[in-house]
Length: 87
Image: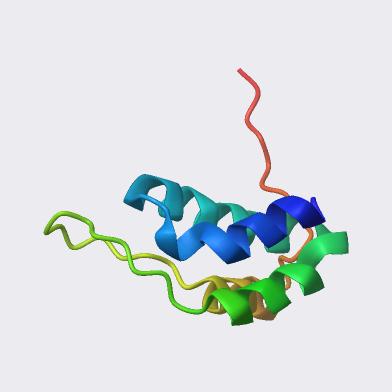
C-alpha cells in the first residue's frame, strides 16, 4: 500500500483529470476507512496539496484531501466504514 501511496504522491498532478479525481478520492478513502494508514495519508495530503481538476465548466468541486480527513476526524468517523444495505 505504501508503494501505491508513494506513486500517487509523485504522479497525481501530472495525471489526466479522471485519474486525478480517482487518486484524490482513494487517498481520502484510505485515510478515513483504514485506521492503520490514516497518518500516512495525512502526510501524503500535505505533500500533494490542492488538486486542480478541470470539470469542464460545471460547478463540481474537487474535495481537498486534508479538509476531508479533518472533517471526518472531527465527526469521529475515522476508521468507520459506511453501512451497507442488503437487498
